[in-house]
Image (cartoon, rainbow, N blue to C red; front, side, top):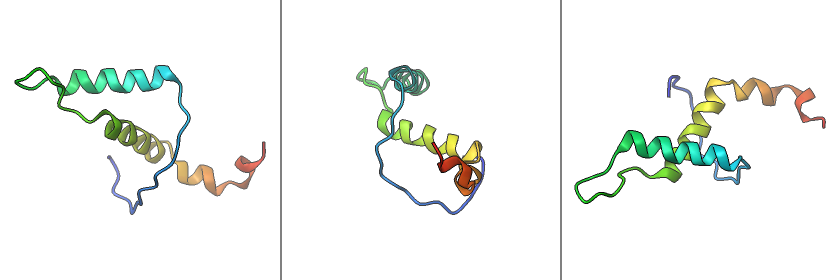
Length: 73
């Protein structure tokens, strides 16, 4: 990740569109490629977590949650 901040791992359920999940899996496979036996060498579940974490850090989730107006529906 681009910034080094103190972070903690939180295991949660996240709602996302099927298209988002499909894009992460397809792109991760393209980048990782296959090994000698033809298997992909990437953990796509870890990649989903990595992409969400990067998004939260880069798009300033911290400021978003500090604003009480964002809690109103």
